[in-house]
Length: 311
Image 1 (cartoon, rainbow, N blue to C red):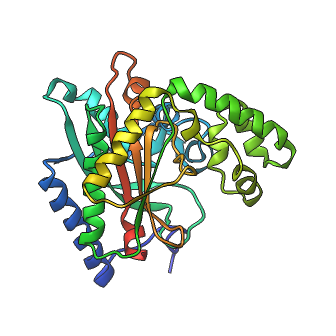
Image 2 (image 1 turned 135 degrees about the vertical axis):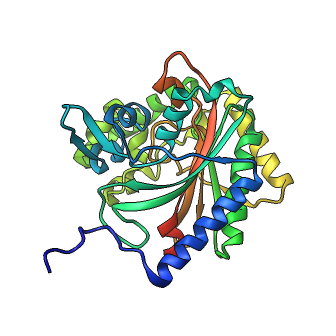
Image 3 (image 1 turned 180 degrees about the vertical axis):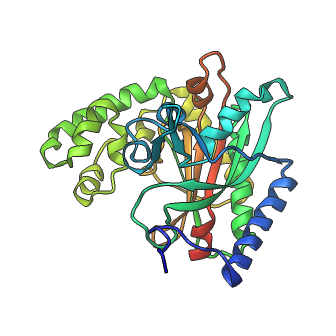
């Protein structure tokens, strides 16, 4: 035998292939009932798209991307997630000229260089949803409802919705100042990466997986205490709508999500052992980050197919 498959990838065949196909079929059928249309974007994009959109201080950009130089000397990256590429396509194909909102879904491959473990692979598959063109909390409720319905449809038990608000750029400034003041008191105990991040983007320290850093940030200031009036009202309306629809949730101030494009609402579906099945939220500034001439609000989520199969 000449070689083996690289670490962190899988071959799909037999019963497992049948299960994966069934999960993807359920996701596609449900998305269509929510009047969403499918989009397929390239498996690779210009690296700058992820640096600007996902964020240069995130683990994804700093540690996990598969980046290479093509024969034309251009920096190219295998996509680590689906949202940035979908938003690039939305802009490049002038979808904003259509009646709003635009509702897209995809099943795509994604690539991240991380330690392979249960439900996490270096080449994996995501079901994702993008709801573009609405500032209303109703948009979050719609995508959360879709995710909750799919989880139930797949027969997954012991899963609960956790929500938080990380505010907008206006209230993030005060929060970052408070967080940086707290982190400076513990700077010597932080890992080298967090000591660097705290100067550029303090919130990324909250997302660190190093045990010593996780212990430090347990008592750090929380975004929910620094929300301005607009963000506070948005979050209260979201909670009221979820309650009215009978979707149980828990406010979890530890959720900040690992990508810089999030604003206001962030959410995860998590089991009692802390296994995250699905994550998403609002990213009102992402399109503006990709094209400064546009400023269009968006919300969505990503759900790992392998994580569903390992659940």
